[in-house]
Length: 320
Image 1: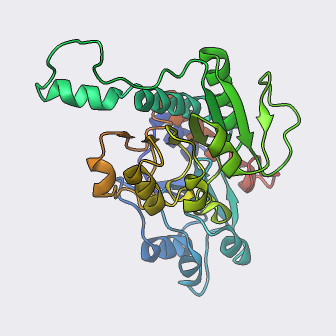
Image 2: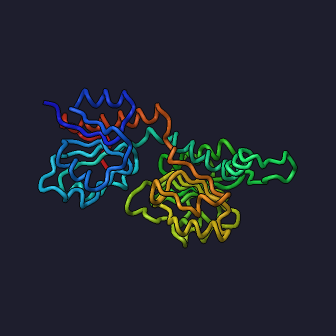
Image 3: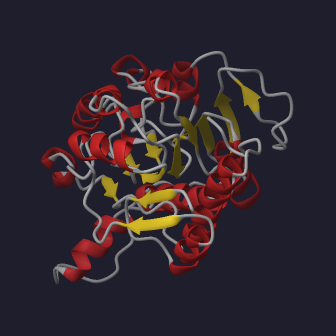
């Protein structure tokens, strides 16, 4: 008899097919997030769960049932801040994720946001669509020319390095970065590791946030860090929304301490504060960092491989 598997959102067909070769699969029929009450019930019902961002597996979910049937949470994505990994381990449940495959797609989105924000592309498109474009003139909507500027990277892992390569080799940008551990060779000529996030903010024209979503990174980019930005700096976030203190970000944008922001993620998704929506110097995207069919399919297949390894008694390829 195959183990039972819940897939909490509809996924590309090849992923579902691969999962059905391993498990007796139940697939949710809509994209509604799973609240604690629902995830608690699911933990008691299925041997494994392929979970996604927005499905809340917090300590109360694990404690909701006297006995949890589930022994594996295979997360669809790299970030797993929606899963209390410590609580899961306390209930004998392993957690995996899907690193690597989404590196390039996320880095591409960071560069997209950098260019859109620096060159005021979103603002320009809104003006044109509203029928307010008066025609070309020499001082219209002047933005930042990113070529030759300095990129600051906070979190120099796979994605941070991919962003830095694109910025340096594509736009001739100098690179400075902050990383908790020492990075011996990031592959970027002249890149410098600085001792603090504040120092990165102070030296950068564009700052890209690329740390994983995890409890220790909640509000990592605080009001004090944002206050260290030099005039004219823009910030880009393709990591997790709660990595940046959203209220502090709004305050910094309103005061002019930051010149702009490009955001693909938000602290309380899908809610986006009205203050951000009202700002013309902010580019807002609906968490599109990995929105490519081939990327999403590969992510799902990695999650399925973790599930297969678990039920075959093999070492988990991507345990967190």
